[in-house]
Image (cartoon, rainbow, N blue to C red):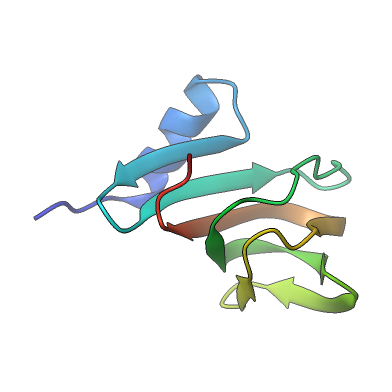
Length: 105
């Protein structure tokens, strides 16, 4: 079994000065923690994998393809592979659990 604590993952991500921390990689999926601070720009590009976002904390909008919605703690968003997507109008520091399937390249 592998078990993780969100506070420890956030500390590790912050210590490595990166917006993204991959913390689990398996044959069929990978998991990571993505962080964007209020007012920050999301610079990610479309991925080759399907992905699911679970918002752990914060508030923002996300545009996936041509659709936009507001997200906050507890929101879950599915992004199909190769679909343009961005978080924007980040009004509270955003922390998002990311699931890639298959695992991110």
